[in-house]
Image (cartoon, rainbow, N blue to C red):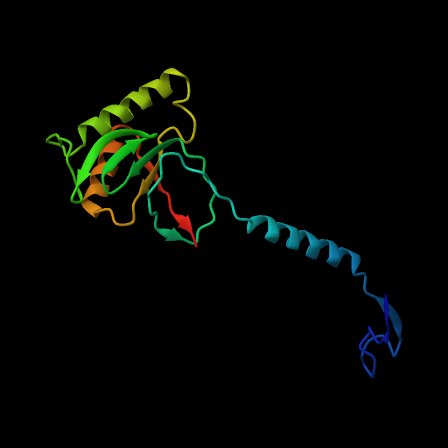
Length: 171
């Protein structure tokens, strides 16, 4: 594609080269390749991914605009009435507080025992050295008391699950 004749030497007196004119062609093929690749990666990165979670009926998660995909390893669900680990009830909640006995360190004993058994089972199966071995997905109802969340997080950390991700609903 040619855009006519241009003076590429600056021209005029003392311009170093006289008034020579040259044809300048602009090749748009490379530019179109770059733009199409950029468009493809932008569209690919903005696709919506949803994860179906088990045992989360009646759970109202908070909203978020983050678009990270996740692969849940161990899921802890905290509703307004109970605490579940992988769909198995391990604790009860009444009036926003945990009913289960807490030890002197502040951990929820049944939750700790269940998480510890999962950790030992995973290490025995040879999955203890993977990158997300200490990862837990916490699904908490948006009305859950912060003290309850703190107790669950502390218990998970003591059981060896110190890397926590919170589940939310995308906006």
